[in-house]
Image 1 (cartoon, rainbow, N blue to C red):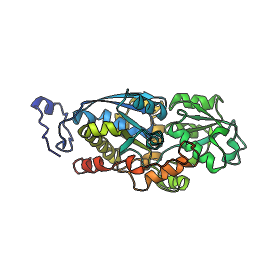
Image 2: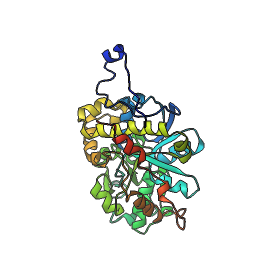
Image 3: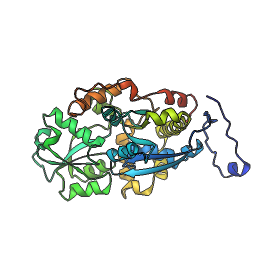
Image 4: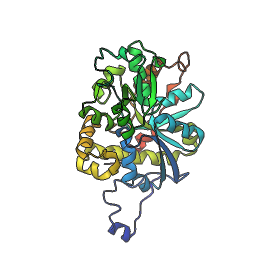
Length: 345
């Protein structure tokens, strides 16, 4: 890695653009400076590190010009990458496994979440007498988008209760106000979604939580091990052609993750867009406390994470049954390790 020194003019320094600049950026010349990133539900805490890197100009500090396209769910963000309209996805790690089953090789290169943060809950109004998850058979379950991480988590919870994904109806409701409205209006009987949506519904007394993966302990109880969640992933072709650009993306994301470890609630509120707060700052900060532990502190993939993810999918997904998946080709910690040697909060 060649070290290039960041030189600023007096005008830039006077403007405070370099305040808190953490390091002399360690990277060679970027293969491309413009990168399109697809994400499914950017307002969710699941993708908060991406928002932090964007809003605090960490990507710009790396010489990158980022264009973020926000979709209704991770499955749709994935389609953008496969279709070529995005070079990188901020999405669920599980999708790298599903893609390899189709002979499409994508690789995770920086982890955003070490727990899925997804909550499965039923509507108290629609299902007041729920006895077990098995009672969801034949019901409508709202997810961010069919095929996204929310439907994957719900499908796994159902499989543990002896219910097939085909025994329910998954309804795409998005990741914001639309999801809340869908449950409140009775369009769905249950919901698998993330914060701040789930905390808002819980506070309102609208839901009964039946499965929760917002903490490490709960995640290990549900999945039997460490379950990697949001990450940046790209095709192996993109990474091979753009190693320095991939490193720059990683540097920015690791810097965001480190900032989140010590950021105050006031700093967080001041950084995210107003629309993320769902009209209630106190609720947003309460939600943050629920999921803070789920954020990766350093961007590293846990060694047992990929295997846990594969086991989860194989419990219910027919496309992975009987398929040999080479987990070593779905993730790498190489870029994060280089970033950690240079990035400081």
